[in-house]
Image (cartoon, rainbow, N blue to C red):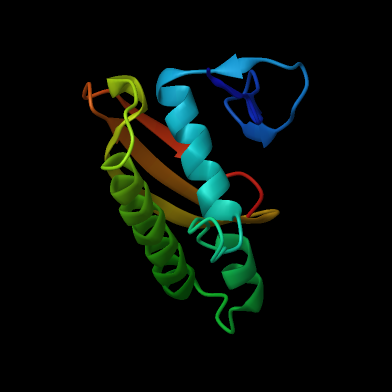
Amino acid sequence: MPDLSLYTVGADDVVTFSLLPVTQVRGISKLVQTILVDLLSDPSEITGRGAGLVASLTAAVTSDEAGVTLIAASAVDVVKSGILQRQRATVSDLDEQLVDLRLVSVTASVTGWSIVVEVTNAVARSVVVTVPGV
């Protein structure tokens, strides 16, 4: 059974978290949702998930682009390795299987940082997503 959608994409292609309207998500959208939740969630020993991107950026002593890029790259690596490891133990549609996750860019924005990642699934479909809330 597909998961409930936790985010919506507005007309301006901005991703925001929202449970309304209640919808289900499948395919690469489900994969992207998993990545966003893992990036933004604090690490959990119970679930073995979460990269703590927001907490790391909040606690960072650096506010320069190079320092934030290192933090974001580390979070992306944690999420990528965690998802690839979990995929070995589960069966999912090819659309929902991660092949690659890479950091595209980190730039300062009016509200904080614009962190952009590229997600590639097992059917070679790629999407570029701006991580919300950072």
